[in-house]
Image 1 (tube, rainbow, N blue to C red):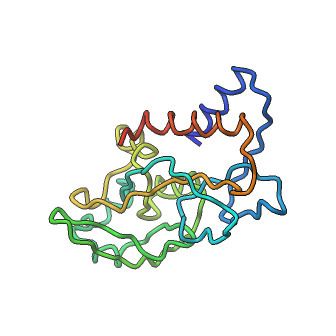
Image 2: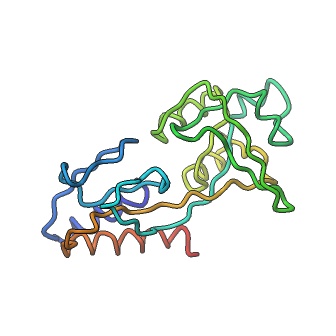
Length: 195
C-alpha cells in the first residue's frame, strides 16, 4: 500500500477517468471471470494462468525483525539455524526463509511459524507485541527500528529480495488509465528502490 496509495491519490488528484477497487488476497484472481485490470504479487511462480503476463515493478529488500520484548528473554539468534528455536510469524506459501551470509552462501531455513498471516499489519502488530520473529520489507520496518520498537535479526545476513510484479491479461488491450497507473506505480517504487 505504501507504493500504491500515493499512485491512487495522484491519479484521483489529476482527475483521470478511473475507478479504483483494491482488495488484498492471497488468491490469484481469474481475470477471464472477474473484472480485474491489475493483480500485484511477489509470487510469480504461483501465477500459472497462461492468460496473464507479468511486468516487473521493483525488487524489495527484506529483513528479519523482532521486538526488544522478545529479545529480553534470551540472546538473539546468531546463525540461521538458531531461528528453529524461536517463535516465528510467517506468510502463507512461504515455508522457508532464504538467508545469504556475507560470503554469499545461501541458507534455507524452514519456518515453523506459530502464525501464518499475509497482511503485513497483522504480522507487524504481533511482532511489536513480542510474539515472534517476522520477515518484513525494509521500508515497512524502518520507522519501528528507528523508534526502538523493532530490532533487526541476523543483520549480517540478507534475505532474498522480494520481486513485485503486476499481472495483466495478455489478450486485452490495456486501457490508457491502467497504463498510467502502472507507469506511476513503477515511478513510485523507484523512489524507494532505484535499482
